[in-house]
Length: 194
Image (tube, rainbow, N blue to C red; front, side, top):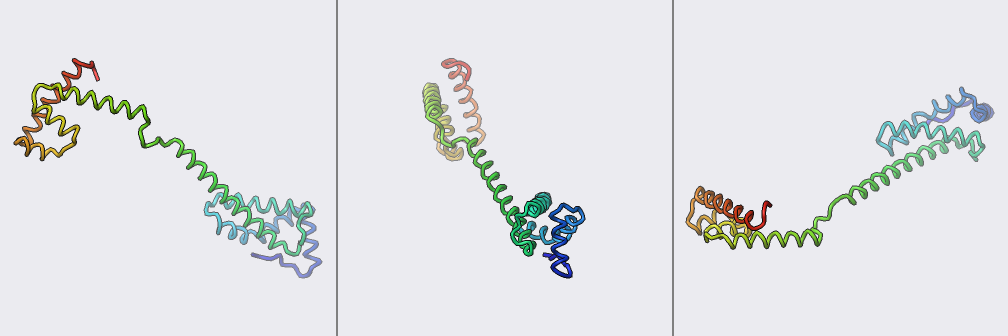
C-alpha cells in the first residue's frame, strides 16, 4: 500500500489536519494515494467487481468519518488503519452474502415436498390398488387377467410373459390392448368414469 509521501512530520501532520478539517483536495489526495492498495485488499476477499467498488467507497467514508471525529488513535499509522477497515468490510460482506445464501437455501428446502407419501396418500394408493385388483379379478377371460396382472401389477418383463404364454410380441400387444379395453368397460360399469 502506498504511504503518504511527505518530506517531514510537520508536512504530514498539516496534510492530515486538512483531511480532518474536510479539505476536499486533501481528501482526494488521501483516496488517490490509498486507492490501489484498498482495491487489492478488498479484491482478494471479494470477487464481485461491483461489491468491490461499493466496499471501496464505504472504506473511505468510514476512514474520513473516523478521522474527522478524532477516533483514529495513532494518526501516524493511518495506512494500517485504512487496511484494517478495508479488510474488515470485505470479510463482513462475504459473511453477509453467505448468510443470505444459506437462508435462501433453507427457504427453498422448506418448499421441497417430503418424498414419502403422507398417510392419506398411502391409504388412497392402497384403495386404488385394491379396486384395480378387484376389477382385474372380475375379467371373464383368464388370459386377460394374467396379462394385466403380470404386466401392470407384478411388473414382469414382456419377453418373459410372452415366453410363458407362447405369444409373439405382436400377439402380446393385441392381447394386452383387448384386455385393457375389457378392463376399462368393466371399471366404468362398476365405478363410473375414472
